[in-house]
Image 1: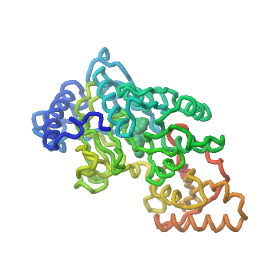
Image 2: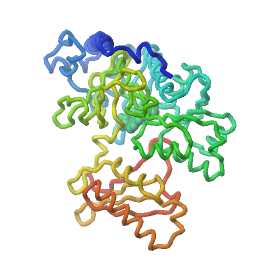
Image 3: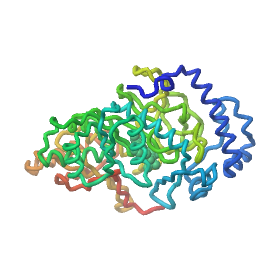
Image 4: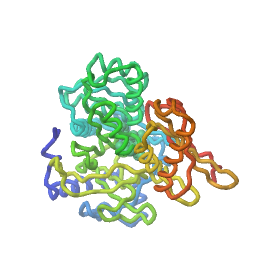
Length: 433
Ligand code: DLL
């Protein structure tokens, strides 16, 4: 179902006019109320009047994670604190978290966008949505919660963790949609299988998964094991939280809700916008946010934009599944390696479970890439010879994709740590430079 057909299926030219008007307002808001933005624009020699259409976006300076950190905690808010009704934050791997704020209107907009997202994922007011994203400063829990209520569904605010209880609630309450990270969805499937739950008998039909990278193979695995349709949903705290983009039933790219956020793809080295269809770094500009407007935010996420019309009728531009982040790229012996490339191979291999860890060591000043992967229960009982040939086979497949040598270590079932939120897939033990 399309939540807001009038807007989601709006003719492109009409949306462009809307974007232009909203962009001009946003740029004025930033210039007038956020000293950091005013300074950046002055340094770039532009004023808000230079933005005559949404195509002038490229004149604006970028905003980076460091800008947010420098203004920690509230320095980039564009409204007085008395108008801020909510704070969220997102911790990175280092330093202070990024802090974002919402006015009442921002929370309403977010709920509307989450209503669109949940509808894209297949649910409506008759559904029972088990929300296993973490509640708290993380945007996942409350984002889904407000959207679920907006569409009139029944939300079960269970939050993440306590997997056996998740399964009990799923059975007893008859949840029809699950919302959590894709890695946690697989963990739930695994525990349900161990507990002997008959998945076929569960009323579960849909899942909306995001907050971490996953591959299409992982989608197939989740769909098969939980017997649901799995939808990729995308967002980030700095832009809003979940509700920035969502797949529809066509499962062919994520519709960016571009009446509220304009996406661009840039070359992460030259910082120049690239032609549609060319992969690069995603950049977002918010069009309607009041408390924390954001101009040309460099997400570090890698994707591609597709402006062709989708079969579902929505006219929003689509972004491809995130293939990695500019900062999760490992450079191993000079070769660029993305964890998603390894995940794709593992999920195609027979005899292994979709649980893995990428471990990088430096041995005698040479980088050494190890992939630890769990074997399935059936294979585990096999003789050593079989296991050796399996690990060689997987290593060969990974080497074909990456072009560098790799050691595959098969580990016993259920030995790699499971995550209830965002999974940690890489351990890089090399000395930091
Ligand atoms: O993860 C918001 C969210 C919550 C999205 C629930 C979807 C569902 P942050 O904690 O700020 O916000 O992390 C944002 O997570 O820049 C991406 O690197 C990654 N990410 C989010 N969604 C996806 C996805 C939330 N569908 C960061 N695929 C982003 C791949 C994703 N990566």
